[in-house]
Length: 455
Image 1 (tube, rainbow, N blue to C red):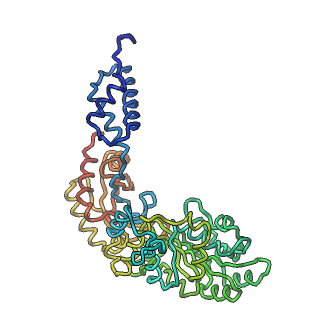
Image 2: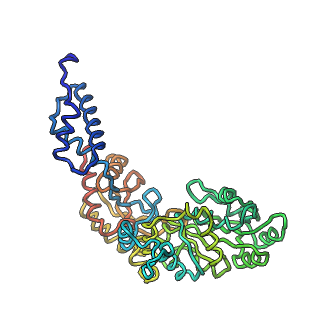
Image 3: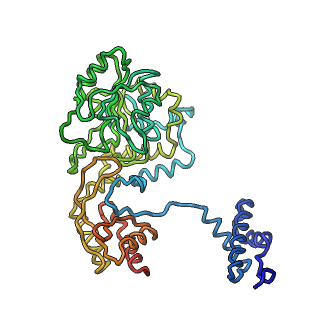
């Protein structure tokens, strides 16, 4: 067919007129025009390849679908990896209370309004009040993540002030952010003490006594995302705090993941709590809101009232504060701890606390529904997210056999809902510790579709 004989798409104006007859009346005209132009360009390419022309109605429908595709919502994801705090999957699921609080806060909210006086008040104080009650601190502050909290805390050393850190704690805390860089960006001077594997309270004492170090702050960084073993020694926290206070220095403890429940009760290693570190003499403690706390991404700061006030006045504090939705979800999450409902209502702690026997029962039932392609398998779940490294929990799940494990895993990952698992020994493994029981039906259906897919 010659170029002159090839069908041509209708004009933009004709398709646009048809779209406006059926499309939402309130949709922006410029967006409609752009969508129609894109559809006409696609139609021109189709016709050049010899495809039959589409009607004006069909082109208008294509433009409408293109416009609606921009109204993005996250896809439901089932985390069957066995990693409870999965960074690539948004870390932890929120509690229903946190979800409801965030939804309510999306509209007009009492963010900085005192409902009694009608005047401007403190910015969403509920989360900070919960933190004070849960940790015994004098005051609290919420930032947009823990890196921001650490940066504000290090700023308490002042411009040129020395920040003492053990060489064994000069760590990278995630996302390429390193403790030495945080200290330098705060305008402080890094003072290294001890060695990579052994640091004692006397090492801090020597640096504090050295006038040349200009030490104003001791920063302790909890190794929440790695383990040191063998010939190691860590200084006594109380002894370090006593020495620092004797020389007028501030003690800041970065706990990283943080924990507000005793992890050892769940068969895990003990994770230091903010209340413990404050009791041992720390002046400021920082930790994350979205790891072991089980809420949204946030930096949680507790400690002395005068130091929290100084951090709040820092010019960078405004750039590091969370929005109203995050504050509301943080407050709702912390409220569950105060109500004694964290283990029952926060998804992370529900997943940690569930007995392996219950997971075996669910896995057995799912394997029976799926058939010969699925076997019951014993697994080990990990905490993940840089929390409690090396700690695992006994679990059960499914091992799926297929001609190609890679193709099956991809089929699960590209389906609806998205199912994310892993491969071991040529089979796809799905760990049920990270799958809520309410998702079992959706998981079984997704597995069936992926197994039945051609190829």
